[in-house]
Image (cartoon, rainbow, N blue to C red; front, side, top):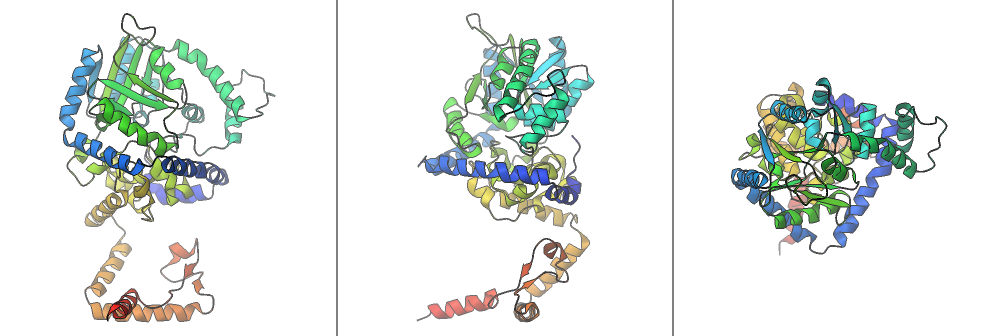
Length: 475
């Protein structure tokens, strides 16, 4: 997947001018916010569960090698196999090798962001294997040859008419004059198209929300039956996951599941929560003959022990992007890679390099909403600030910005002069704004005023008001 993060500003402008995208964002985003708020309100111990979830993830990351080794041992005891993949190339090759050993021609896939990260679909197609996305959102964007715009709702950027148009273009064997009277008709048509694919697939590939060290199980949570069909009908099941998905015990997993669905979709639990442990046993009625877990690093071990380790707690609920005002204005594609929103603004520089993604940590208002809703309490604004500091240290920020910061620092080191300058500036801005109290244009503030008015300052400076407040408190 091409990384277009260096073109973030152009991407964002196009997104804000895209009427269809703006309609989709306005329609879908409020539902996520309302449902999460209701789910949290109905669970009095939710804040306590967030602390528990954070502590589970911190403990696991502190002993990650032990739990990964334990996971492998228990997978093998259950008759499965773990494939360790340091890089994206290793992961692609491991999956391709398993598919070739199964003589696979068609592969069904459940939704998996790590498969997007390693560009698995393109790799399989280049090698004569047809991957078929079975999640409804992933299915439509595969037909449209697009990337996901959201980590739990891949087609977040589409409206109903987009679905109808694409289905008419892609499903040409069906009557052209068929009517989509309601959303259910779209679902019914997709189900009919995918049914034959499920039955024909030689290999099924899913992601994994969690890997349980205690039992050697992989866990997926979905709201469609596609995940279960993908991992039980084919002869071979491949679970694709990254190293930080491991958790110690079943009890730890269920604690995390209690905050995952509520944070993601406002549900107590997803419709399907499926635990897979090994291949089919003699008395099992269904299940794959082979069970493989492809565990991918791809840069994550480099985050361990760094100031960015907290990002590895992420359980991919998307609450941060659902509540982010920047994501809410531009959608996911503007971020230019697999992971959008606040979590992507931290994770993408870690995996793809700051030189190509330096715009992302700056795509934040630092309102703090992302941190306030994160179910594992990741300090996302603080982590974005770390990336901004690194950007400055490596001289990746524009020269004008560095000069302006240098000028501000020169004044800040001279308190008396700084206070005099701020008082003069506030007085001048009040005078220039006149009765309007706002600026529609202002020198050196064009990037702000081209999209909104700039309010004129009200009252005195912060230092003056602080001094007045302190004087008022004195006896």
